[in-house]
Structures are given as C-alpha cells and as structure tokens.
Length: 188
Image 1 (spheres, rainbow, N blue to C red):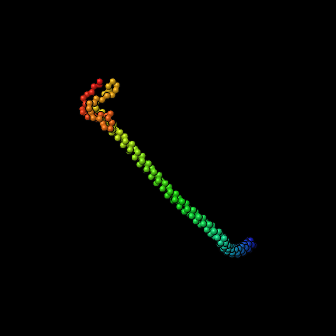
Image 2 (image 1 turned 90 degrees about the vertical axis):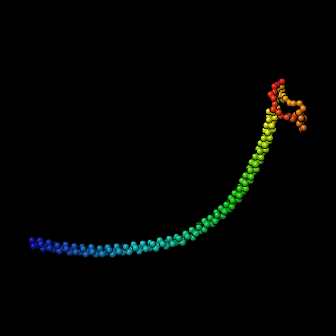
Image 3 (image 1 turned 180 degrees about the horizontal axis):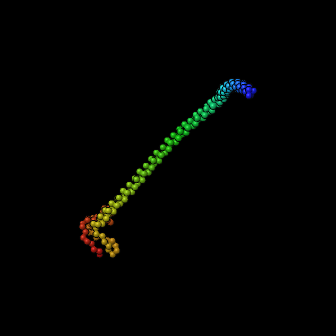
C-alpha cells in the first residue's frame, strides 16, 4: 500500500502541477484576451472617430455643393414670387377699375329705374286724376239726374222741364234747370 500511496501522491503532485500550469495558462490567456479586448475597443473608438470625421467632411462637402444650388433655387423662387406679386397687383388694379365701372353702371341703372318709376307714378297719377275728374262729372250728372224727373215716354227717355228755363250759353240745346224738389212723375 505504500507503493499505492506513493503513486497516488505522485499522481496528486502531477495533477496539482498540471492544474497550476493550466491556471497560469488561463491567467496568461485571460490577460492576453483583456489586452486584445482593450485593443479592439480602442480600434472601435478610433474607427468611430474616423467615421465621424469622414461623415462630417462628407456632409460639409455635400453642403458646400448643395448650398449654392439651394440659394439659386431660393433666388428663382423669390423672382417668381415678385412676378406673381406684380401680376396680382396689376389684376387687383384692373379689378378695382372694373368694380368702379360696375358701380357707375349700377348707379346709372338705379337712376334710370328711379326715373322710370317716377314717370310711371306720374302717368298713373295723371290717369287717376282724369278718372277722378270724370267720376266727379258723372257724380254731378247723377246728382243732377236725381233732382230732375226722368221717365220713359213710349220707350223713349223723357225729362219733365218747366217752360221758359234759361239756356246754357255754351250750347243752347241744354236748358239750365232750377232744381226744386220734384213732385212724383208719371209716364205719359
């Protein structure tokens, strides 16, 4: 058993040494890996900085080329806007002139309509006055007829008048009648 124990002790020593060697290798590999990771991180940082510088340079270069084109486009747009503003001003002036002309035409039309209404009203008033005069004359005739006995003499109208009545100077066929309340008239 002693031999077994000695072999086991040798084996344990060998295993311990192999474990120590493996640990040392792992430590060395870990240190190497950390160094490589630090190098990669630094490379990434440097690459990111380089990309940023390149991107900024590319943006500056693109802007340097595009800004003059944009300024030219803005200038053209400004020119077009000025032209449109001038055209709008001309059209507004023309529309103002048309509106004034339309106002005068409307005023003239209203004036003519007012004259036509006044003339129509005057004509209607004159016509109504003539009708009123005729109506007054008819009323006077009717009033006179109420004061003179009128009847029918064998189908012919007849008036009972007194003899010797004065005649109307403008037409002697008419006799001026002195109105007296008439007695009842009987037909002949």
